[in-house]
Image 1 (tube, helix red, strand yellow):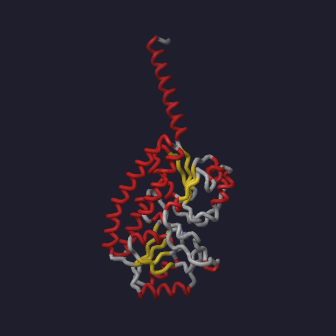
Image 2: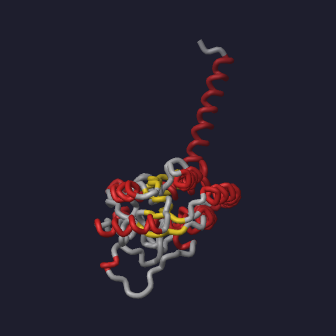
Image 3: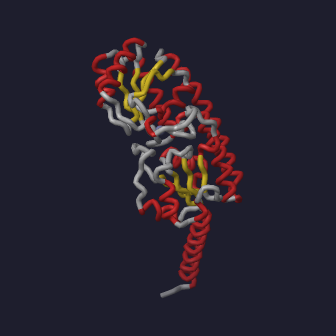
Length: 307
Ligand SMILES: [Zn+2]
């Protein structure tokens, strides 16, 4: 039987549920739907946007973002998105155009307000000079697009991302700005530790597989002696490996950094007959950006210790 007291209680519960539901609905509406091409960009958007964004990456952390199959599921994801965040500098040139066209969401096309290319906000290195030739391999004509492994360049990306999120969601523009500023401060702070550890490691030069680590190595004053792939996108020949072995001995290279989405047989062969240590390193975020750079710094330290 309903006493007046239970009626009030029931009513209160109903009001509470209604309140929660409408708060949830408001919140759901306010969320910006962001799709990124890499897990690194996904993590950066998440750090700035927190609960105000719903972000997911098209590729996985151990996937080579140069070569990706334009899956229909990617197009479905983009159809519902407010913002597409890409690396740019033509890194995704082989596949992202098909995904964008297939999504039939014009706001995410290049030049529209729902499109962001991180590469537009940094100064690129390794811009090839003169006429490009297919024989030069899969070169990046706009410059090296792997800038995200330089924490200082990443700060520029984070700041530009905060502005973009604020443009699409002006109610939270200040929040995004504040988050980006805090993030930049923490990253700069952490840089001191990374820099001193790399100096202490006494590693001065390294070999990498692809030019994915160029910006990282440049930032931390490490020389790149050579790449395992003779030309971008072209696997090493036996002759090239022999020349690398010679170089490693000659220049006393202690460190082979082999990006985890490339094969390691060549690296293992070089390691087997030289003093160099072979480190398989991540290129994209697995947990968060700090952990990614931490893994690279630890890999250099391990080379120094001969691990
Ligand atoms: Zn590349």
